[in-house]
Length: 173
Ligand code: IMP
Ligand code: MG
Image (cartoon, rainbow, N blue to C red):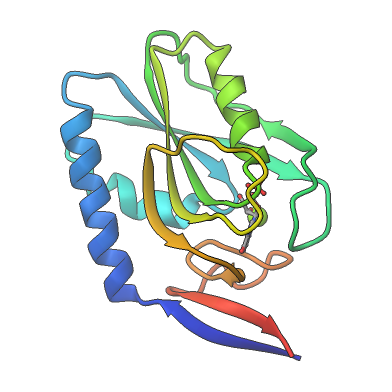
């Protein structure tokens, strides 16, 4: 059986996303912003985030998946959908749902670094340091969460729970 405990409320999400939007708006004045979401998890967060960035921007998506079980990233990250916009000279902001071990993000950053973008930064909804294996810089972090497996607001467990509007800690009991 599983149990769910609310850890980030809708009010907290709304307030924090608005702050991130303001920060990104200030940082990307006079830049050529492309927001690239990592599917599937980032789509809910990204939909809210782009609506509080007060700048001209374009959006695109990549799809990444890592082999492994449902709750742990194996380190072998596969890119199964590429961006379609031309990124040369663009300021790329990668949007992730959650950074856990760091493998997915390293793979994405390397990938975009090879595409001649003017800059590559990262915005993650959640940063979870519990299982971090690669120490990497994340430019914008919505929430730091110490541990646990989280679902809701785009985050899944075996593709379930993405539609929940708030974030829950999923516990096997
Ligand atoms: P990393 O490569 O270990 O950093 O894993 C990142 C990916 O693993 C995220 O984009 C999520 O898809 C998934 N993930 C890691 N932790 C969680 C979690 O607590 N809930 C749901 N998905 C997670
Ligand atoms: Mg996932």
